[in-house]
Length: 188
Ligand SMILES: CC(C)(COP(=O)(O)OP(=O)(O)OC[C@H]1O[C@@H](n2cnc3c(N)ncnc32)[C@H](O)[C@@H]1OP(=O)(O)O)[C@@H](O)C(=O)NCCC(=O)NCCS
Image (cartoon, rainbow, N blue to C red; front, top):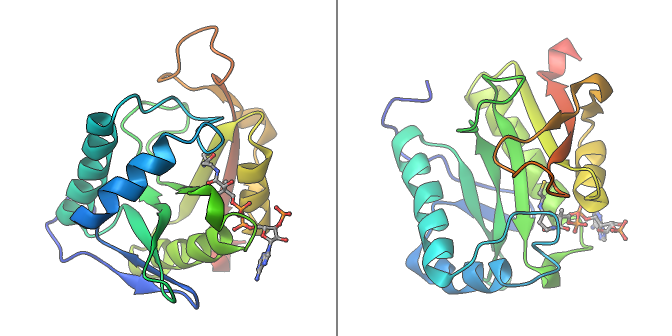
C-alpha cells in the first residue's frame, strides 16, 4: 500500500484544502519554520535551504505513496497555513512500525480549530482509504497545544508508551515524548 506509486490523495474539509506541495508554499513554510513560537517544541530548521528540503521530502513522499504530510491551504483566502498529515517515521521508535499523524501551522492560524479540522480529515483518509488499523501521535512533554489536538481527536494517551525520541540528542529538553493512539473507528 505505502510503497506503490499512486496519484496524490488530496481532499477538503469545510475550511481547508489538503494537497500536494507547491513552489509557492516554500516561502510561507520557511517563515513558519523561522518563528520561535511555532518551533518552541520542535528541533530547529536552521536555514531556508533546510526548510525547502523538508518540504521537498514531504512532497516526494506524497508523490511516491499518495499520502504524507499534506500542505494545508485555507480555502477562503487561498493562503498556505501549514501542514497536516500522516507519516511513517524514519526513526526506529519503540512502537514501530507505525503511522503517525502530525501538524504544524503558522501562528496566525492558531486558535480557530483548523489543526483539529485538518487532522480529522487525515484520520479519515488513514482509516477509510489507506485501511490503517491504528494511527499514533507523539509530542514533546511541554507541547500542551499539540497534546490538546490529540485529545480533541479522541486519541488516548498511552502513558506507559512515553519514550525518548532517538532523533533528539540525549540530555535535550525535547527528548522525552508523550504517545497517543487511536484505532479504526469500529475497533474503538
Ligand atoms: C499544535 C497546533 C497545530 C495547535 O493549533 P491550535 O490552533 O491550538 O489547535 P486547534 O486547531 O485544535 O484549535 C483549537 C483552538 O481553537 C479554538 N476554536 C476557535 N474556533 C473554533 C472552531 N470553529 N472549531 C474548533 N475550535 C475552535 C478552540 O477553542 C481552541 O482554542 P484554545 O487554544 O484557546 O483552547 C499549533 O499550536 C502549532 O502549529 N504549533 C506549532 C507546531 C507544533 O508544535 N506541532 C506539533 C508537533 S508534535
